[in-house]
Image (cartoon, rainbow, N blue to C red; front, side, top):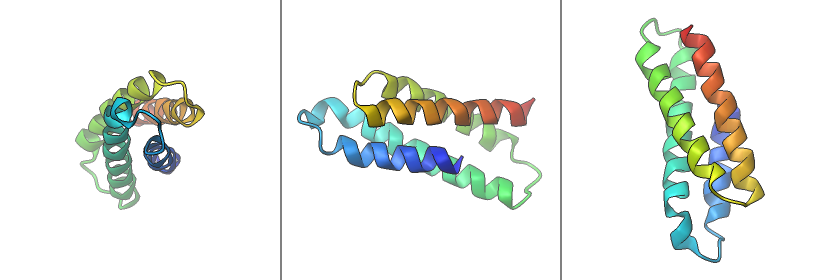
Length: 97
């Protein structure tokens, strides 16, 4: 999850340098939301909280959405972020199964 947080934060920051920043607004917002959700989920799991299922489900959903959004763009940081989000979503699936 922390790898996903790092990629999402980097992607959001890199998107701010895009020539057509208006085209990147959804990507930036989704990156920021995904980073926050993954960070909170990682903290919750690290605390051994027994009722984390709902948070992990939301993290899974958010990571999938972020991966889909980033995959729409050609920038390497977006492609890297999409891959990190896919891996985080897979980790969430494994936790839930």
